Image 1 (cartoon, helix red, strand yellow):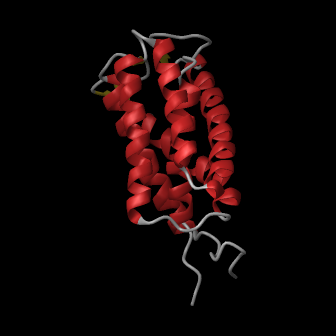
Image 2: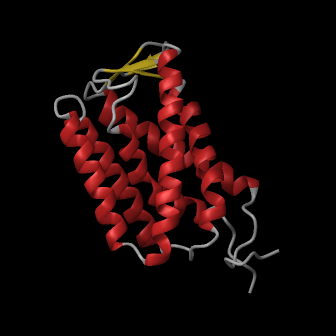
Image 3: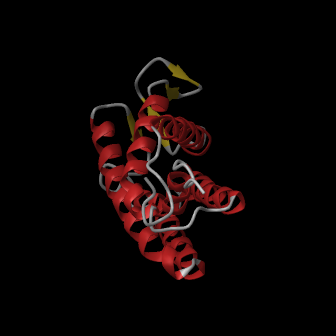
Length: 194
């Protein structure tokens, strides 16, 4: 049955597909921008090119959790165009890449640039997109930082530069992923029947 946002409930297969694609997307970012640049070091085996193989299933689970958290707010938004969804993902990937360049050697600059990028993104967003983006950003930021801190304390990996188990710039990195999470969430819903 359609809801007020003009969609029907996400089908489990769509949610699973978005979770797998999202987990793969985040795993590639982790590998390219954090493992290969020395931002973090994985300790568990087996590994591929320095990244433990349990990263992919963990990020698939994290992506599913992000989509489920974002669903109530995504329902208030219009379905994104393919261009808007790709742009949201590309901007997040650019933020991810930036952390690989600046995260260890310039952690405070990394924190400030990521916060500024998020503020600019909000300023350029449609007014209806701002509140959901901030709320989802905060929720996935808190969940992501706590989850990464827990998994790090379990011995899976360590960030080379840590402020409090994880670097302070990690939270605004998640903030910068909020628009992509909302777009993926909205795309995981089937369009309303006409």
